[in-house]
Length: 244
Ligand SMILES: [Fe+2]
Ligand SMILES: [Fe+2]
Image 1 (tube, rainbow, N blue to C red):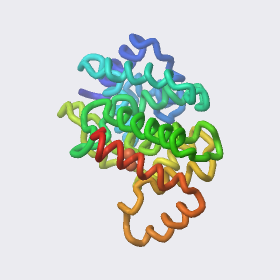
Image 2: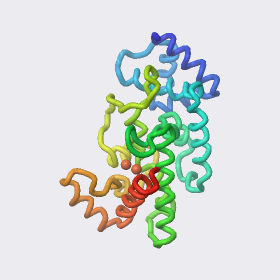
Image 3: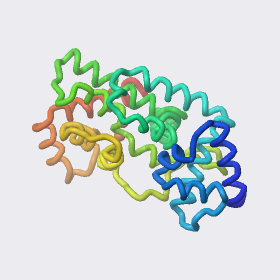
């Protein structure tokens, strides 16, 4: 498929989904002018634009492949939680366009099915809220337990891509940022102002499942923000005990 054909399909699908060019531009971190160029088939010849277009096309195309139901159901479910009012209005749409509601949580481990990332994130958020209620955890912000759980693995929206040639999710080899907790923090801070506690919880949510050189900092983070330990526990509980 050449760029003109991709652009036309993209435009047709965008219109079918009643999305504006501005909404698409926001979703893929591009200018409106750039998206208009893409739709006209005048795609820049550099890899990142191509990757973004492929991802966007795949995201929009998902309703043709049965994934849209999962995507839409999880997107709607997101608004069921009272804490969601603490995120900017445009952020849920960004999440949707970047695969947060339909991506897997892993390629070969827990929650590898489409929608697994949202299921896992929700499970960690629920665990953290449960610990907060039952153990009396104190947070600097009342919505932090939900926010930390829901977005601790935000990096995965960039880690996995749906290949339109193979129809399966695979590791994105064209990433700009690498890392995990740190990458989630960087991505999330583009949209939400985080407390120091939230930064520490997300940054160190892998606990000691990291390079030994990080253990000292992980220990420091727990001493300063005990909820770092509970975040790691919630993540382990969701993935290793609940299998989500
Ligand atoms: Fe993680
Ligand atoms: Fe996780």
